[in-house]
Image 1 (cartoon, rainbow, N blue to C red):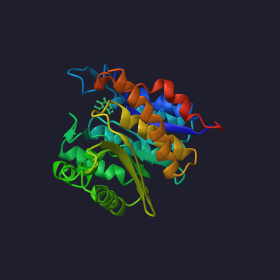
Image 2: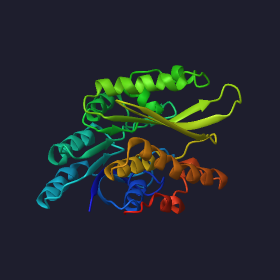
Image 3: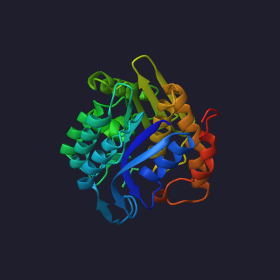
Image 4: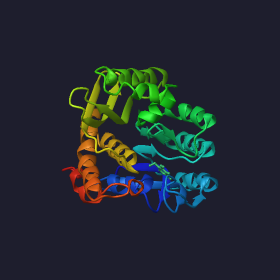
Amino acid sequence: MKKIALLNDLSGFGKCSLTAAIPVISVMGLQACPLPTAVLSNQTDFDSYRSVDLTEYMDSFIDEWKKLQVRFDGIYSGYLADTKQIQKVFRFLEEFQTEDTIFLADPVMGDYGNTYDMYNGDFLCHMKELIKKANVITPNLTELCLLTDTDYNELTSHSDETDYLQQITTLANQLLSSALVTQSVIVTGIIRKDGTSGRSFVGSLAVNADNSYYTEDTYFGKGFSGTGDLFASVICASLVKGLSLEQALLKASNFLTPAIEEAVNAGIEQNHGVNFEKYLPLLIMKES
Ligand code: PXL
């Protein structure tokens, strides 16, 4: 059975990180193997949270996994609390990354132009090194700006202009050409205003050496915890299963759109995440 190693935290509330990745990867017929980086009462965007850091245990888990002689078809790194945890991902890659592994690095650092608590210049430098080892990265627009030293407010002030997506494509290509082994960049959370109708859309843009693909849906005016993690999980599982980048993008967006819409209609508080559970069957693939 194909396996994906998940280097991510376990948060009790927020429907993010491992609680998003494990169900998605499992329903897509792959084995999810979590190496937890921390256990949290709830994700860090709530007013308060408690966290138990597991960094010091990660090496011993890696050693045990080596003894088991397991190999992974995919490696997915998500929320990392500090640079020490990024170093542990490097160690994990040294032990388990092969030419056949798909490594998806989600450079979790912020959203909507704001950075998360763990972010600082040193963290960014480490993250820029980590993405060089990835086959696929899934930054949201905020993270794309951080990785390309771009002013988020300046960029998004053009969100109603016709060349907005082209500007974002150029930034994604900039990462591709500088990031050595990165094959694809998928930018999530692109909020675009239609200059004529005034309607807003939220979209994702996938760029590789040959092509770019874009998909968008109506933007309901707010973002929810964990949507980036759910999205990255579908992408990682799809690519491990051999789907194309375009198919992976469509699968992720077809799954997330109804889950977000339902959370909006149900008046769910953003920090609690979206109603994705009942849409998991959309991810089942015939051969899995
Ligand atoms: O969804 C990203 C994420 C994952 N894990 C933790 C977080 C966040 C975003 O805030 O706090 C603990």
